[in-house]
Amino acid sequence: MVKEKIDFLTGNDAIAYAVKLARVKVIAAYPITPQSPVTEKISEYIANGEMDAEFIEIEGEHSCLAAMRGAGACGVRIFTATCGPGLMYAHENLEMVHRDRIPLVIAVPNRSYSSLFADYTDSMCEATTGFIQLFVESPQEALDTTLQAFRIAEDHRVLMPLMVLYDGYVTSHTGATVRLPSQEDVDRFLPPFKPYAVRIDPSRSEFIQWDTPGVPLQEMEHEQAMTNAKEVIKEANEEYAEIFGRRYGNGLIETYRVEDAEAALVTMASMTGTARHVVDILRDKGERVGLIKLRSFRPFPAEDFIELQEKHGFKALGVCERDVTHGCNYGEVYGDLKASLYDLADRPKMLNFILGLGGSDIRVQDLQFAYQKVLEAARTGRVEKQTWFGHEIGAVEIRLAGF
Image (tube, rainbow, N blue to C red):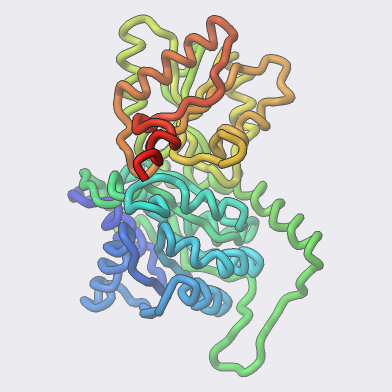
């Protein structure tokens, strides 16, 4: 391995640097906060001659994804970035990119639809569009996972689009020390893109199309590709570790101090660092608690959670997430995890904590409270299934009384 340089980068700049290292050939993007610095930095690389790529200035996210579909059909490596209302505006073409089996990588600094700050409203709305979704914790993990993302999405066992997800502002605009891989080592890890089929050749007039199965068979094939992606994500994580010395659990999940834990929390993205600190505090007090970081929301690693439960026999699990499914009164991850563990004879008690919505702070005391509730459930068998944070303003009828 060539010695890595060290720099101080925001999450957005780390993503842009990874895109340059990946030798992406076509980028299209429309600015939206907090995504804009990603593609601004990429445009600088291209303007300065540091990156040989086409940058398409587009009039909106719907058109952006259409341009990405076209470029992907030409058989080149492609990238874009968006978030919030922009990601939702692109919904129609997100669906089409997955149906076309275009291995597009999108960076999404998660933000609320109703504010500029972090929650998972945007990407959870798109969880059924056929995109792989990998959540990352830090600028370093954002860079490393972006490089892995191209390796995963372009694998012929997968050929599915992929989102790299990181918390808006908390990670996108916060600087951290980042190790920068050399171009030589990245080229070893990520060879030039070899398309399964080039369906549009600009030098020819006709459209080259493979046989498209009917919708039921097509969707079954896509689900098989998602199943394949679990193994490919693990492979990419291990291959990356061999070259660069950094791995993130098994690629799908990452555990912390779970070996003798009677209770554990499941977290995603930036809140995980705070949760690790809380685990250490509670362990020093003699509490047997652990932490499971979910990296891959899609495909959901049900088998890995089952294996963890069978191995460690947690009495209770709590899921902390910045999203909620209205009408069900729980978050998306909680629903998926509970369904995954349902058939086990030794099921843990399950609790859900809705917190951080609209970018509200996730504090040490919040996660200490969550661990307290999970430990109570482990010891008493009684469960408060949902706990909401950030509702101090009071009931709706009280707030509306002044109108």
